[in-house]
Image (cartoon, rainbow, N blue to C red; front, side, top):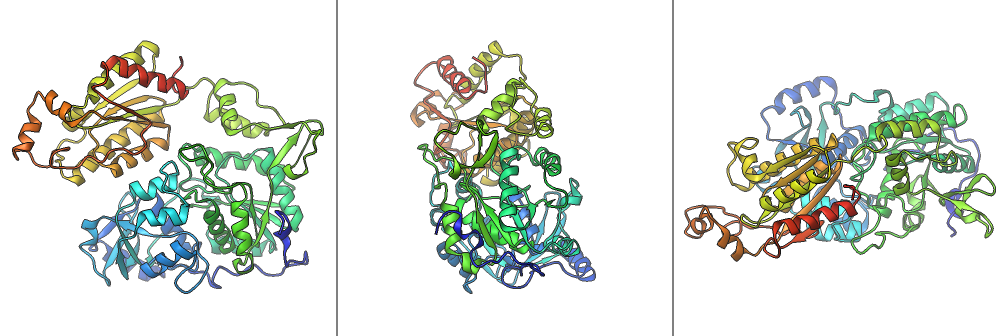
Length: 586
């Protein structure tokens, strides 16, 4: 079947009088009645609890609202295994993405099937209780290969899975106490039930949904308008505003751009609604998942574009997914999916015709123009003109306000390595070279200094070391958020801790991991405090490199040998890297 041909397979453009049924036939909302919720909230204070991270919090919100129907909770092992291997739940229902609750070994050791676990937000507010049915240890490498098709940590979903997720999964149904709090764009935050009610009240029954994680410009408007016209439907713009790809435009700015775009559609033809989804950037599987979620919100059609939910290129420069892989996977499952897929090619601007057209309709004599995401960021950074054919003035104004011309982008240099590797010395040299070249604020978060102040009271257990590094990551992220430069130099021995620090920083700017890979013998020879000798004698316990492991970074932005050259020479290499990345002017 051709790229466009199956958009209306089996559909007549006749009047539809009722909304499509949720996936599995029933909307699985998990909130308890108010009296029961109040009682459970009071009792949850005495239960073991988990403070959910961003991904888990988004997943819980969509479980509770029914957006993940037919799921009633986090996957048990039978469901998990079949989803990973076959894109199906244990009962055979189509479901492509594992929805799991990961916890530490120490926490899991306190539990057994039949236990109850309070699920809380970052402030400790109880949102739900998990009835534990299953406790299991998944094979994360296998999951990465099956779900994402790769174990390359350049893929953000893989990096999260392998480096940040904890080793044990808890499976079971959830009972909802209250939804997570949102104070932004509250009028745009629908549940499946509330959006379905709005559709019914306004007589919308044929609805095509569009997923996005980027600001929308003229090409997106043309694509969505044509797709809606092609299938005779109203348009639901439903951007993801949970976790997206590191480096994406923040959702506050994006939503303002979407609001500015709405008047460009015919009156009464488009609705904007926000989806608190934690994207996995899983390409074809994610596209199938997105379609199911939109079906639960009441959409009858779903637009799938080129490289839907793809994260870009792998470590070798090759795209993770083919441009039409997502369309092909949805085509395979079209009959049982229950929502009609509208595959659409990229829209391009033909200057000689002064119009947008599908890339499949471009003629040899057409003068095609485009502006890539990188080129758009360059226009914003330099303050240069953005052509009117590319975007709308109202959208450009919002982006310029968020990204002022010539504004410096914040970044963090994160040195990691053994004690005595030379991290602090190289960092000191880098700071000197930076201050020679820029008047920007540079803040040093040295490992020893951090332990004296920010992490006073923490010991050297794995948990305390993890807390120390994530505190450094949080402070660095705030420095970066305000356009500053953070120079961090902890030992940071564990991959998970470094990954969490990276995630914190990359929500606001760039994270440059520098592994100072000095040989252990050299580090011991440099040891003026005699710490290594004490560790070998057993006087100091849990000493990195001797009695506690150092997990070598697999894909740092730079790896240097602290004994290969003078610190100033190594520092110069780092400055050149920053210049090459466009983070520092030459």
